[in-house]
Every structure is written in structure tokens, then in C-alpha cells.
Length: 192
Image (cartoon, rainbow, N blue to C red):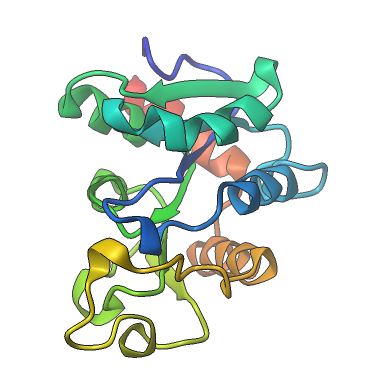
């Protein structure tokens, strides 16, 4: 309850990955948050949590800073992994790069949308009935050919558009047949 207090639903964003090439641009996370929390959107008026590890603050901070102060939750380096897991369990939707946080969100059972490009979604996709993924138009092999050095790869997620990610989020909501109000009710019930 400390990290994600009771209130409107929460959209969790994880804008960092363990290597730069598979990190979707920060400005696109910002635009996506604006779209998904706008009036008549699935998460209209929702709070937005930015989730990242303690050593990832510099990369995640621009997303956090761009959010309205009254609706943002700073979960960057929020504490031990169990605290982060508990915070994710209180969120209505998670959208993030291929990362450990994406897998934690899927394990928490919240709707989870993973963003993929130079990593193999056949191996690393979020797992579970409440998950989905969206990837760049290019295959991971095109972006990350055998023998390439992933540590020095240029950004590989730039062809993944905000429109594509927004549509994938809407498809996930439709498939699950849930609204933000349903999520808020389920969270309140689960927190008893």
C-alpha cells in the first residue's frame, strides 16, 4: 500500500531494458501514457507508475518528469524486489520493454504488454493468459544478426510506433474483456 496507495487505477511503465538496443524511446512511453489515460481511454484519469531499478534512474527519469505530478508514482528503485512485485500486483496494466520487470508483471497476473525488437519473443515473451506482446516490423534476427555484439548495437526499437503499441494495449483489454473500473474493483477486493 505504501508504494501504490489506494486510488484511481495505475498504468505501470517500464521504460528501461538491460541493454540499450531493446529500449523503446522515452518520448514514446510519454505519448503512450498520455493516450491511454486520456478521457474515453481504457485507463482514463489513471495514475502512471514508472518502474525501474535503482541504477536505471537516469534513463527512466525523463518519463517520470513528463507525467502530471498529481498522477505519477515514482517506483524507480522502489526497494527490494518483493516490494516491487507487490506494487505491480496493484496495477491495472503494465507496458514495458523485454525485461525482468515485464516477467514480474506477468507473474503478478496483471495485464502485461511486452515490447520486443532485437530479442526473440518466441523465447522471452511474457508468459500467462493475461499477456501479449508487440514487436518491431523487423524480426529479431534482422535487428540482432548472429555474431553481432548486442553491447554496441544502435537503438533497434525506433520502428515500433506509438500507434502499434496503443493498438496492442487496446487489443489486450478487449481480449480480457476488462475495463479500468473492473481492474480497480478487482484490486480493492484482492486487498480486502
